[in-house]
Amino acid sequence: MAWQKLGQQLPFFYIGDPDHLPAGVSAINIADPAETADAARHGLPVLTHKFAAPAVAGKPAAQNAHDVIQVIKRGVELVNSGAASALCTAPIHKKALQDGAGFAFPGHTEFLAHLAGVKRVVMMLASEQLRVVPVTIHISIADVPKALTAELLSETITITNHAMQRDFNIPNPRIAVAGLNPHAGESGAMGHEEIDMITPLLDDLRRNNIKLIGPISADTMFHAAARKNYDVAICMYHDQALIPIKTLDFDRGVNVTLGLPFVRTSPDHGTAFDIAGKGIANPTSLIEALKMADRMVMARADA
Image (cartoon, rainbow, N blue to C red):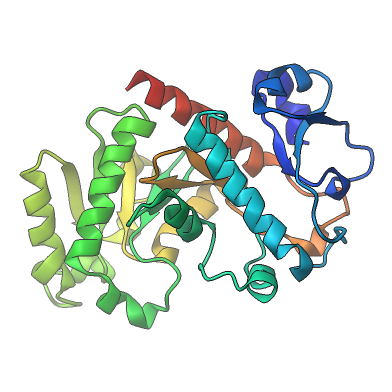
């Protein structure tokens, strides 16, 4: 469906087993990524990697775990070599990778950082209406205050600021920073993290010419008028960031990894095994992820 929508307008190729594609797909085998633009005129270009087991709609296959990992590695090799301009990853089933290959990473993002040799990367969720970055991600609320260190917050803001300049062509990005506590602590009445760590850190970063707004009470920073005042919002934990973007633009959100030496995007949804094989999946997030990857590549070229 993504190829039908984009075609030659934005040529991309699929790395994987052509036998795993739905019946009736016009797959065009390519031997080299350089063939993509021509192949995309006739069908979905496929750089073949045969998998160990067939794909059964709606069922994870641990037997294919090694092949999934190899395909991800191959994608990274292609972008690192310049053979491809960007990497757009499809959702993975983490437990199947753990069961079948002892996959030791929480997800795609951490694995890609490992392959790129990068110590710290940042997850951004982005759409036309909002860009958000959670500082802490897949941990319990109870663990957030301990995990939210000055070092982590500083690195997250610095990486985000650089990526907004390099990948989104915004020379002086305006970054809004949410508080951790309700009402951003309300001068210490509802928590001291803002007073003790967040505000002093933001003041230090401002001296490095980073345009920061905050800390702001999270319940006042996502309405339409507030969003006009910043280019990206830094949030302290997962749901503080993801609830507003998924409320505003559920189908068009894109997962972007900031801080990698190459462009990586992904649709902001999971494997959706409950609807696999039914032909009813919504391709919008994948299409938006491909478009955003293309825009980011162009921005890097202009930088």
